[in-house]
Length: 299
Image 1 (spheres, rainbow, N blue to C red):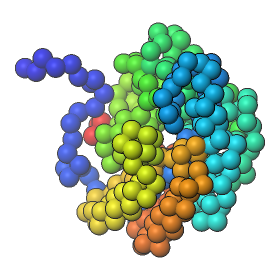
Image 2: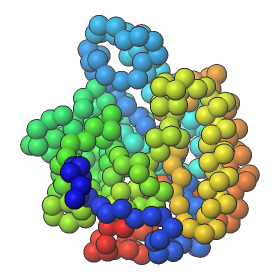
Image 3: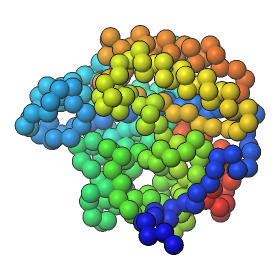
Image 4: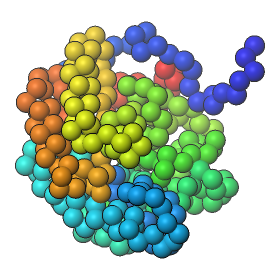
């Protein structure tokens, strides 16, 4: 018997051993863009850093991240409009308090809004259970007030989950989460009161770990996106998959990187055939649960 701790949320399941299915209209490859929109505490000490963090207030790194909300995201919105690409806005609810114009632009485009907690200056998974529950419920309610619709999806700030996070998400009304980058298909996860769907989220095709941690630049990142797309497109003939692309406006919205993002998104559209569905994680969740309802085994 194994002595290792286990999360007990789902069982091991090889992707080749699962039931076959299609995305809407017979599509086989679901591609979505997750646009992370984050708001930070001026006196906080968390968040990506352009250079070595300084004692708070860390003006250089704070202002660098704020550029994404003030400049980079608007450049990206214009690109998504030109390409007629849907986007999922992964929003700290603090954006509703400090930059409501960003939410208005998402809504005008008809994009999905996903809760990204309150702020990326705090790690909610380190809170006690009641405090974490309050963060999950509060961020969902704030975005409901701002948009008129409560978000169904959640991505934890800093990917900070506690052992109880899936239970608390289900309890507070969320239908799916994005934190577990463990698969290329949606997976039902057990909670104390039912099931919550895990929709694949990218940690490899994600500009923060690639540009900030691995010190790659935008040309490399764009090549990675295209390479992954080509492989997924070939493998989708035998199984349906999800390919997410995670972007942050303070990185890929920078002028010197933006051209590479524009080119690779053009390339994806040019190389897409009738089997590609450009979509959002919420639409993926909605479709999957019609095929495999929550009572299904956690494959």
